[in-house]
Image (cartoon, rainbow over all chains, first blue to last red; front, side, top):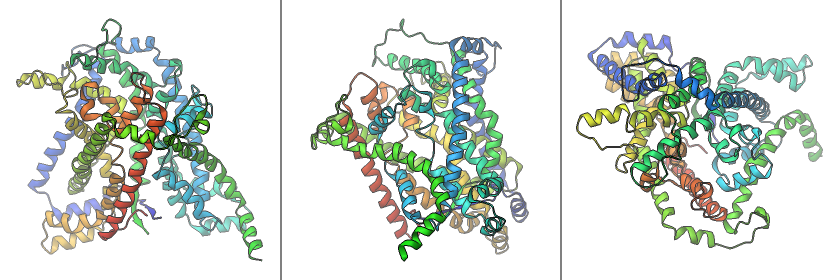
Length: 306
Length: 305
C-alpha cells in the first residue's frame, strides 16, 4: 500500500511567488487571465447574492434589491428552525469531538509500524474504503443496533472517516522519534506522550481534521433522512430539504408527470426558503476563514511514494 | 522461544492495541457486518426473519434486476454521467490550478481561490435550493433566457439540458477545491527552475509544459485512479437534490434508483433485490479500481496499491 506524503507547505508559497513574478514580469496574458477570473468569480458568487437579497424579501428574478424585510427570518423561527438548528449544533459539536478523539488515538497507534500484526490491522481498515455492503445491509445494520430514530444515528455510524485517519497517520509518521524516546527515558508512558507531546505539536493537522469532520457533520442530510422518522429530531439540513422539495414537486407538475394536488402542498414563500438557506449556510461561512487557513497550510495528500 | 519473544513485543505494544480497540469495534459493526449483509443478494428478505433467517433463493434477485428495464436505464445513466464528469469536470481542476499558478505573485490569486473554494463546503441541499432559486421559473437565469426568446426553457426539468447542468454546477462546487491539491504540489517547485527556464528563453507556455506539468502529473494519475474507481457512483448527493420525475430517464443513477426503490414508497422492489444491485455496483467498482491502478502503473506512474 502506498503512503501519502503530507505537504506542510502552504498552497500559496508567498516568497516563491514573488520570485516568480520577478522572473516573469507582467504581460498582456496576465490581464486576460485576470479578466477571465473576475468574470468567473462574479458568476460563482451571483447565486449566493440572489439568495441573500431574496431572503430579505426581494422577489426572485430581480437583481437589484427592492425591499428589506426580516419576515422570512421571522417565519422560519415559527417553522421550528430553532429546534433544528440546536440539533445540528449539538450533533456537530459532540460528533466532532468524538470523531477527533477516536481518529487521533487510532492514527497514533497505527503510526507505530513495529506493532505485531500492524499489516493486518491496516488492511482491515483500508479495505473498507474499497468495498462496502451497500445501502440495504448498511440500513439493516444501523437499524439492528437500535439507532433508528435516535439522535446518536447522526453521530455513531459516521464516527470515523478512514481517509482522515490516513491523513493524520501520515502526519504522525513524520513525528521525530527522538522526541518520543527522550520523553520515554524521562519515564513518560505511551498515553502521556500522546497527550503531552504528540497532540500539542500536531495542532495544525488536528485543526484541519476537526474542521473537516465538523463540516461533514453539519452538512449531513442523508443519514437523518434514512434513519429519522420523527420530524422533531430533524437537523437543519433535513428540515431545509423538506421545505425545498415542494419546489421539485411543482417542477414535475408543470411537466404533467406527477399529479400532486396543489392545495395539499403548502408551498413556503420564497423569502422563507431563502432565509432557511442562509441560516443553514451561516455556520459554514463563519468557519470558512479558518477552514481556508488550515486546508491550505495543513494537510493535503501530496505525492505518493511506494 | 520465538513465540515468547512475540508475546513480549505484543505486551510492549499493549497500550496501542487498546487505543485501536474502539475503531476496530466501529469497523466491525458499521463496515464488516454490512459486508456480511451482502449475502442478502442471494436471499429473499423477510422482515420478521432478518438477514440470517431469510431463505436462500440463489441467483433469482440478479435474474430479476437484469430483466428490469429501469435498472439498465440507471446503469447506463451512471456510466454516461460519470464519463461525462471524467471528460468535462476532471480536467477543470487541473486547468484552474495551472491558470492560477500563472498568476503567482498576484494578490488577486488568493481572492480567486477564496471564491472558487467556498461552494465546496456547502451541502447539495443548500446548493440545490440556491440553483432552483435562480434556474426555476421565476429565477434570474430563466428571465434572461426568456428575454432572448427562449421562453419555455426549464433547465432543471428538461432532459436535454439536465446532464449539462450537472457538469456545470459540479464544476462550480468542486473545481476550486480540486485545484488545491495540484496547487500544493506546484508550490513545492523550486522557483529557480522557472528562473533558469526563463533565462534559457522558455516562454510561459513552455514553462507550464515542461516545469509545472511534470511536477503534478503523478498526482493527476492518482486522482484519475480515484475518479475511475468512482465511475459507478455518479454523484448521488447532487442528482438526488436536483432531479425530478421529468428527467429520471437521463438522470436516474444506480444510487438514486436503489434509494427510491427501497424507501420512497411508490414501487418497492424488496431489500434482497436492491442488495443485489448494490453488490453488482460494488464488484464493478472494485474491478475498476484494480484496473485503473494497473494501467496507471503501466504508464510509468506510481499507483495507489
